[in-house]
Length: 367
Image (cartoon, helix red, strand yellow):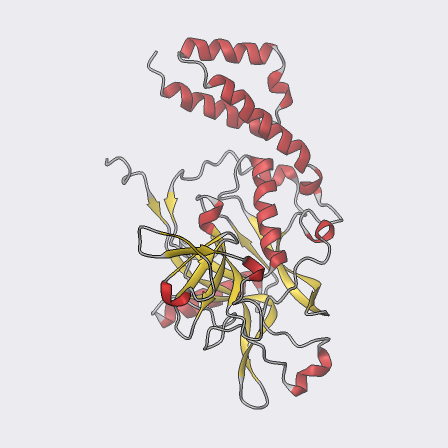
């Protein structure tokens, strides 16, 4: 076994799950349009295999599914749910990528941006202005927020991840919030069966309201149901592929600009306002209402605070255990916690996790 190599597991990307389609106007111009369901788009040169995956997906969830079963892969959230501002040109590759504070680009694409440093890979660092970036303002919007969620579909044949791209403020907040409260409930977020949904929401864009379908994790399940998976230990280290950052034509046109096409004439009657892109939003209308947990809290959200406190207390107790330098000292410390009632502050799931942490810690002690 080779340290640093033999314990790594790689998870391949099997394709994408799309949130919209390309339509054609009465004048023959192609433009992106949001749909209220998930579309499986396998990445395989084998046509038969692709058809089998799509057919199986529809058999599991229906022709136009608004909810699918997923798992988060066993890697840090920044790897399976990357979130950046991205700018493209006429080609498929990135021109600039930033986090709201610092962006990386090359000299030819840094016009109008403040240089603040360089990287050892030959890129220059510029000040990222986020929503105030000059490439986001004006008629030609080349820069936009973009998140790439990579998930496992446990019921679909095949081992790997599928990527979902979204630029929606509300979808990003919903998924980030879900990751946090799931970890608070279970001590981890990876390899736990969840339901990912498309949820209708009225959102303002450029002063007009239109209906969009944001991503959200279903909370209407019991705590016992979700916590029964905690005893199943996932692999501790895995490598998922980096997000596919080639230009997505549902979010950027051939020139790398945000599509600004109105809906075809025959469809205007059914829309309150033309949709420029799949995820156009001015931002949250009321953060208190739109961030998870929702106003009508499900059982998971109601118990989030209790679980968060239990998880924090478990970590606090384990930090005390790590001050012990011998196995005898650890056992004595644990007896003190038990007799002092410290363990009664923990939920059963966190008691089990603390026990596993202590056992693994003791394995590393020589005496």
